Length: 260
Image (cartoon, helix red, strand yellow):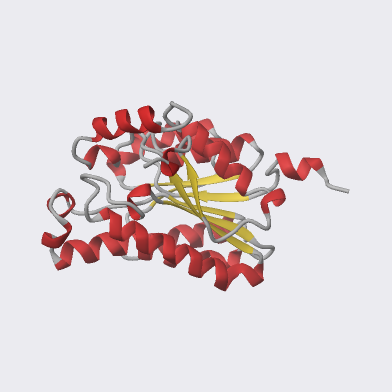
């Protein structure tokens, strides 16, 4: 007989959420949902400038850990996982919601991007997820779930998405390989692909408002996704009832990705 409580709650679970920048962040929508379903949530922030926006959010969900994580500063990623291990000794959920590309490379053609810009984008947007999986693996003693955030521009050419398209394609492929490698330890891996959202990261994409209008007009739902829509869906995937779902890129976009 199915234990219905296991399908609706994350009570007792420990989650690490990275990439919260402000109250419009997808990562914040996920952190709120994890907390609402009963999980304890550790939160990271980029730097001291970002901390003033993130700290009130962490306090709102009574986060027991608020830590800096600038992936361009050696050791900060590892220090966050060390703090989690010291505090909890275990981990059930990791959410990677970090992406970056130098503006000049992002706004130009893919064929014109610099080697340095491409490597930075790959390291911070893709390799960092692989590194988080490596650090999380020994802490997920009873299995767990790893999430990363991607976008439709990984599969189709989206105007002005440019270099992030190939980078996100690599991220989605990495999620599949991680799912295969970590599956025997009951660790699931998901690439989550929300529809266009007004976030700080999206502000770096040229003519983003046009992309929002197109998505709303073409999506079967005729509506844009919200950070709360994404958060609840992600939280459900972290529940025991979703234990046999892994390795896919899961779209939360009102069906926009199925339209031509």
